[in-house]
Amino acid sequence: MTIDGQKIIHAVMEGSQIRESKGIIPLFGVYLSIFSTDYYNRLSFEFEKKMSLLNLKDKSQSLLVAAAQECGYATFQGIRNSWEWDEIVLPMIATPEDQIQGFTAVAVAFGWGDLNVRQLIPGKKLVVRVTDSYEAGGYPEQYGNATVGKCYMLRGVTGAFMDLIYGADYPDGCFTFLAQETHCRAKGNSYCEFAAQRSPDQSVT
Amino acid sequence: MKPFNWQKELGREGHRLVFSGQPFAMHCHHYNINLQKMLEDALGSSGVEILYSAAEESGFHNFSFMLAQFTNIKTLKSKIEMASVIYQNCGLGIIHFQEIGPQGGRIVSPASHHVTGWLAKHGKRDTPGCHFLCGWIAGVMAAVFNHHTGFYHVNELSCKMMRCKECVFEVTVKNDD
Ligand SMILES: [Zn+2]
Ligand SMILES: [Zn+2]
Figure: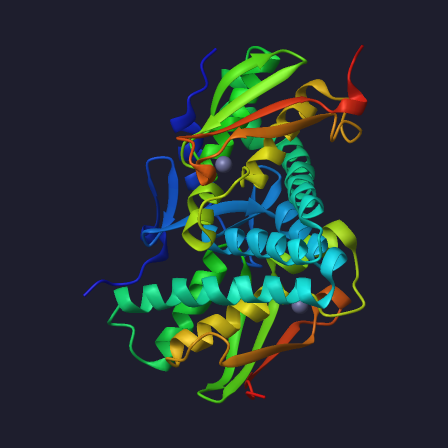
């Protein structure tokens, strides 16, 4: 079945108008905040820069991906168990693969970019393409052209989508999959592309 | 003159989420708190500085942009009211500016996204933890009083993450030393 992304965007925009008495937005089973992408870019890339000075650049990149993957795993678990999901998204879902489409539609609604599923091999591989990732847009403005992919948040989230569908039952399936960013606009490609496959130590032989 | 109505300011440009034309994103407490924990665990006080500065710089730019757009927001009272309305409507929490002037002041927050998120994920802290709000207040104060970022220093005196009654922030002019 086709997932109606516009319907999901509409529901998120409507839902994000609701504030409880503490000024918090409870939506899709999580607390949502709305803040500038500039903040997230500064935070991630300054962290990476500082860690690089300590010769810990690789570690900073894996920590940023892990922070997003663990978040994506918990967040989308909350989302798919929420009443909003049952009411708005579930009627459009016929297969586990449709659920991935539902997840990407929610990510688009959250302002994470124009996520588009390019390939899904059930249980094995997910390829997501994004032509307007805010991380890829923000990096060159501050730091010039990158030599490696810079979209750590979307990398982690792509892995989390596969973890939730094909990993062990929640909460034991996080990091079953790991995504690489094969193309990134920050390094001059015309789009960013993320490929999630089973983590090396989780491969089914 | 354009009246300020946050509901109208939050909208979409295609797949993009925009607030007053600036690119924004929705993120949940899992991500915001994971980032904070990652920074504190990996870098300690320098990690806190990164979070504070990111919130200060982006808060400053966003709020300066808003003030330039809404030229009818002229008085100190209306400027800080707009800041509180934005903070609350971005789901970040409730803040009350108290005794605010060009030399600084005091801000109280009885509830916030970061407090609720931190307590839900990690429970009580032993040290104040609202580094995001400290930085954001520093940026907004600099925008309100026409200073550069780094002009003010914001210190959190008590924090709900430590199970204090409310988060209390003290704003002072930073000494250049
Ligand atoms: Zn990218
Ligand atoms: Zn606090």
